[in-house]
Image (cartoon, rainbow, N blue to C red; front, side, top):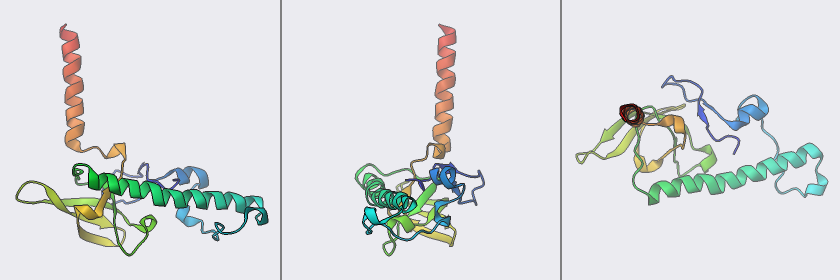
Length: 167
């Protein structure tokens, strides 16, 4: 839960770093603090710090199993999620656990003849890849509003102000 991306650290489209709750807890990314696995050790044999680490590891395990799976199942069962250039996403990989799916930013979309986007080009830390949208999990970050959605919100707000001023 503490590594869930909250917002990009930069507006630069080439930047893949994100701010997470873990940054507030440790002052850096949670991936910088490797600890031994305490999940199978009985709690009465652990010191206080180790007990805290065990609780964190158990919470993290549940988050991986429940939240990331929920994100993916929502995407598959609901209508197709609109993706756009600049959006932060997780790239699903079958040979890796969901915790290790790479974070990426969409740099290009490739709509089909029917206008639906089924393929996107993404930039990860390892390079640039083309992936089907079924293998992409958009992150639920409110900052990632589609530019057209932002324009629509601005236009709606402006028209409601004009309507209230006219009455």
